[in-house]
Amino acid sequence: MERFLRAIPLSVQHVFAMFGSTVLVPFLTGLDPGSTLVASGLGTLIFHFITRGKVPTYLGSSFAFIAPLTLYVTKNQSPGQAAAGLIAVSVVYAVVSLLVAAFGFHHIRRIIPPVVVGPVVSIIGLSLATTAVTNMAAKHWDVAIVSLVVAIVASLAGPRQMRIIPLLMGIIVGYLYALARGLVDFSSLSKAPVIAVPHFVLPHFTGDVILAMAPIALVTIIEDLGHMFVLNEIIQRDVTKNPGFSSILIGNGLATAVSALIGGPAQTTYAENLGVLAITRQFSSRIIEGAAVIAIILGLFGKVGALIQTIPTPVMGGISILLFGMIAAMGIRHVIEEKVNLANMKNLVVVAIIFIIGVGYPNNGIAYATLAGLLVYWIIPDFTVDKKENHE
Image (cartoon, rainbow, N blue to C red; front, side, top):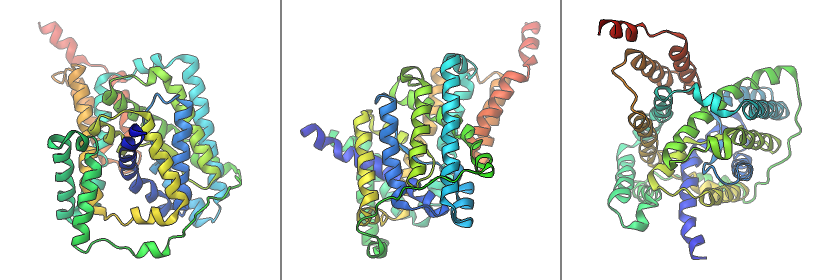
């Protein structure tokens, strides 16, 4: 019982980390926020069941599908078509999973060198920098700085119990400071329903919706791979070997299919929650499963979810600066630990291409940057090495 009570604040911390991004997708696409939270929690529990609790990560709303979901849900008023598209996405996940299982992930892993892995891990954090700084923290810098400083102090200089929940401490103190500044808006509480039960959505399959959404799965699969590289660095264990990347894909695909049937968006592993792991060093899957249960409760009880939504954006902006920065730092650590030679011009070019495309491209930049880095590494020959060897 004591262990359970200690785990609750850690689970709540994960909920706060994922909440903003997860509910942003339904607001942008026209989906129901309550259904989205329930889908997120159910998806995470399904993922953990498939991966046997060996992959401590949280699943939330994927941003890659915002455009097609907006088209079919808001413009066409056809949530059934959106659900059909997401089920098609889950089929792509299943097919790729079977291919990975058949050919062996070690063959795929062999073609992804450390000079690609490290920068890809970094841009997962760096690509979110504008969101954290410009879109969130910059609205009230004083609130963001208070939240950030409290989280940093709690993680580095606080008592042991405080060091495992530094983000939650930052959010609480930042919230109280924002409340004193008159920046907390409680108007959404009165509008929120007491109970919000998700409704089953009957898929309506068409060729157009399948072609519009299924190929995007390849982009999110590459992003999932990048997230797993981050997770490997954090927990110092290779989850692509055990339970295996094929299990990870199956779990993610099945979570997306279930989400589609209850009116939620596509599910994907969340960089925000990986940042929580990096900061707290608490890697128990039970903690994340607890966060999933809390998310389901929030989705079912609208008033509770609305209360969390009263957290001012700058509070989460300050916290996100630390979260996303930790992910970027993990990529740099990977390059150092793998002893990547950045004096080699080809390695330097690969890193340069990945960084600029990954940070500069607004949508799916991580996937495109990964593909660009791999193409440069494997297709373009490195004549500078030969010249140097001949000169010597």
